[in-house]
Structure formats: structure tokens, C-alpha cells
Amino acid sequence: MFRFIVRRLLQMVVAFFGTTLIVYALMFAGQGDPIQALAGERPVTAAQRAYLTEKYHLDATGVGGFFYRYFDYISNLLRGNLGESLTGRSIGDILAGAWPVTIKLALIAIAVAVIFGVTAGVLAGIRRASIFDNATLLLTLLVLGIPTIVLAPLAQYFLGVKWQLFPPTSGANPDFYALLLPGIVLGSLSLATALRLTRTSVAENLRADYVRTARSKGLPRRRVVSVHVLRNSLIPVITFLGVEVGNLMSGAIITEGVFNIPGVGFNLFRGIRTEDGPLVVGIVSVLVVVYLISNLVVDILYAVLDPRIRYE
Amino acid sequence: MSDFETVAASENQAARRGPSGEPGTPSQVGQPRKPRSLAGDAWRDLRRKPIFWISLTLVLLVTAMAAVPGLFTSNNPTDCVLSRQHAAPSGGALFGYDFQGCDTYARAVYGARASLLVGALSALFTGAIALVVGMLAGYFSGWVDAVLSRVIDVVLGIPLLLAAIVLLKRVSTDSATVRIGAVIFVLAVLGWTTAARVVRSSVITAREQDYVAAARMLGAGNGRIMWRHILPNALAPAIVVLTIALGSFIAAEATLSFLGIGLKEPTISWGIEINNGRVHMRESATPLVVPSTFLALTVLAFIMLGDAIRDAFDPKLR
Image (cartoon, rainbow over all chains, first blue to last red; front, side, top):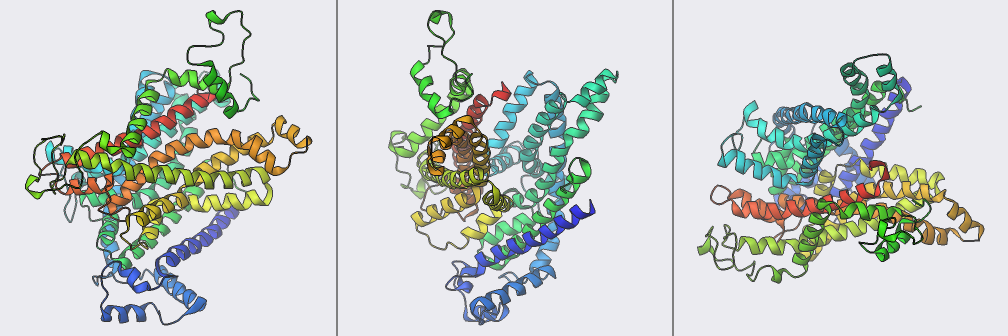
């Protein structure tokens, strides 16, 4: 186990440098005028230009210059110093205010996915090919097929504006109720996938030898399903949900943008809209790291949960 | 079912047999029984599924819309008069007018072209990359497979939306062709991994078959075996995956355009329309609802079509 974790950590270090190098190279390097590219289509004043040249050591040239600037960027990233957005606010401060909101939203989404997805998935898996099973399959297909940019504005319009069941947007300090509808919209995709995964793996495990043994020992069906089958069926679901936490953090761009939730995704949304290069790079770098770490945690959790997996 | 018949080759048989001529039905007693192929079985299965017909109709409809938008509306989508802002339906404008006074329905119809173009070309390029990588990895195994599989793992680990934002932010031109090309490039570069894995695994299965050994004994080289014997087998599952991918590429294009980094005006795209409609939804919701419905139905149609075909081809699900 220890060896596996060490190996996985080493892999993670490689992946970290690889991904950040790609992000960095794409954002800054190999272009005519990095400052103009950073500022997007907006004009750059001489003062901004001089400031950015000094800040990013743009006077150093060649491959050495590139790596110099790259390690500059990495060391700043690791120290949590993400620089300032074009409006002059510290990106670290922006993110510090945004994370709690995004985490709350992601937790609501995950809770929705687990409560409804896993329950319905187990029921559908037990009663395979029943009306309930077919109905959930069709419904999840619908949810998986409808893009968030359709689902979020339509939910906002019908449930928020027209029927006024939920607040249509949330303010600066959203409470649980204001985050509920965005959480459901954000979680619906994970819900559908979690449901399908649970259904398949429950249906598969019900045919396993250990289930037959348990049944022939005379255990009641409820115990077999809730202890033997469920525990083994949840392994892929947990893996998926773990990866999904990383996805939800970055996938919240649309949902947070539409519902006006002041989280990380919303700031990225705004950064893209206002062509604020440093803000976009800062947030994307942090999100990539979050994504990598959540994948790492999931992999380790996976090995802990399933004794058959050891990656030796 | 004959196991060694290739899927692609047997499709012709299924077509020749026609929709009514089932082997083994009472009317055919006395004729020599033809073994039913996988594709024949799949086609029998598909024919009875309403979802297959519904999604196929939708796909054909939206394809026609992209090719000849004039068939569906006689109004010009760029004919926008501000005095008609949010006006009620009139004169061929089925769903009224949007904030800028453009015909909502006409804009939704003309939006099909960009979406379908991006979706189809991304799927095509994705398919090309996936076939090459999957074939090489599956056929040559060893270190080639090891290297290519790691590459697939790495690309699969990149969050698509974030990477697309990073890549597309570098495109600063407003030229419609360049932007469409850039979106296609980004989607193809990031989206080929799933299809490559599918191709790889079907190539590995096909490689071990007797007919490949037979071809090799007859003196066929690697190139010929890959082209003539393995490719037809790897193609069918890849096409199914790519049909589903086409749907998600259309959704991805709309998402990127919605964010303002994909296609830009004056190109008409559902993503841009949805974003514009969203801003003014309190005054009038139709400019939001109409392109949303078009986009959702198109994406669903491709995903359900692919799903139905895959179910029909997967004997384990029967």
C-alpha cells in the first residue's frame, strides 16, 4: 500500500509539471506579443506593458528565458501567489472569497447525485428490465443529452422567473436555498451517470458467486442486497464521484455564471468575458491542480476500498 | 450467429435481405437457412425501436436544415429591425422576434449549419486520430502500445472545458472560418481518446482471430492485414462511439460559443443565441427557449441514435 501511494505521488508530480508546463506554454510562449495575447483584444497602455514586462521577466529571451519564466510561474503558484487580475485585485483574494461558495455548491450537487442517483440506481439494478428501470434509463439519457447551457437557463427561467419556486439568481452571500436549484442543475449530470453506474454494477454483482453463497446460507434478501451487493457495487460509483468533485469545481463555470453565484467558476466566467488574461490563467492553473489532486485521492481511495486492487 | 463474419461485410447481406425477408420465418421454410449475422440481428432489433426512428428522423431533419436552411424558413436571419424588438409572431416568424428584432425561428434554423459543421468535422478528425492511434497501439502492442496508452491516459486526464478555454483564448481573430477551424481543432485534439480506446480494444480482439493468422500465413504484410482485415472490424464500434461523440461535440461547441470563446457573431450559433436570449429572458423567453430546444433535440438525437445502435450491436445486453 505504502509503495503504491509513493509511486502514485511521484506520478502526480510528473503530471503536475507536465500540465502546468502545457498551460504555461499555451498561454504565454511562442507568440509574437505575449502581453497583447494576455490582454486579449483590448489595447495595452505603455504603463501596463512596462509593468507586465518587468513582472514576467519578458526581457530574457530564448529557451533559458522560457524556463526561467516558467519556474517563476510555478514557484508563485506553489506559494499561492497568483498575481493580480487586470483590474488590480489579488487573484488569491478573489479565490479565497470564491472557494467556500463553490465547495458548498459542489457538495449540494454531490449530495443530490448520491441520494437520488444511488437509490434509484440500486432499485433499477434489482428490478432490471422493469418499467421503473426503463423509465430511469430513458430519463438519464435525456439528462445526459441535454447540455448544461440549455438546462441551467431553462431551469432558471421556468423554476426561478416564471413559477418562482426558487430564487432565480443568488446575491453576494448565497444561502442554502439560493444554492439549491443551481446545485440540482449542476448535480443532475452526475446523478444520471451515478445512477447508470450503480444500476449496472448492482445488476452484475447480483449474479456473483458470493451473492449465491450468501443467499444459500439463508440470509434474507434485504441483507444480501444492502450489505454484500451494495458494498461491492459502490466501488465504481465512489471512483466516479471522486473524479466528479474535480469536474464539478471546473464544470461550475456555466452554472455559476448563469445563476450569478460568486464562486470560482463565476470568476473564471467573468475573466473570460472581460478578457482578463491573468485572472483566467490563475484560476485555470489552480483548477488543474485541484483536478489532479482529486484524481490522486480517488486512486488511493480506490485501492483502500477494493482489496483486489494493489497496483504492484 | 456466425462468429467469424465481419460486421462490415455482413451489413451488405442484411441490406440485400431487405426488411421483410427474415431467415427462419415460416414463409421461408424450404429455403436454405442463412446464418444470421451480428449486423442482421442488430438491424432486426433496431427496426422495432421507436427511439431509433425518432432520433434518425431528427438527425436527417437537422442535416437538411444545415444544408438548405431556405427550405425551413423564407426569412433572412440577419434582417434585424429594432422596432420589432420582442414582437409577436407574424409573417413567417413562427416564434416572434428577439431583442435585436431578428426572426427567432430563422436564426435557430440557420444556427444548425455551424453546429453540425463543427460536430461532423470534429467527429471526422477525432475518428481519424483515434483509428491511427488505436490501430497502432492495438496491432503492434509492446512498447508502441505502452507509449500510446500513456499518451491516451494523459490526454484523458485533461479537463476538456479548461483546456479549451486555454487553447481558444490564443485565437484572437474574428474571422469566422478561422474560429470554426480553431474550435474543430481543439475538440479533435482533446476528444479522440475514448474512440481510440475502443478501436484499440477491438483491434486487439481482431488480431487474435484465425482469419488474421490465415492471412499472415498467406504472406500478407502488416499493412495489408491492418487495412483489409482488421480495419473493417474496428470500424463499426468506432462509428457508434463517434455518433455519440458528434452529439457531445455539438454541445461543446455551443458551450464554448455561449462562453464567448468559441464562435463569435456574426456567425449564427445556438450557443450565442442562447446566451443572448438568457440576458433578456424576463422580457421575452422565446429567444431563449427556441434555440435551447433546437440544441437539446439535436444533441439528444445523436446520442440516442448512437446509444440505440450500440445496444443493438451488444449481444450481452440482449
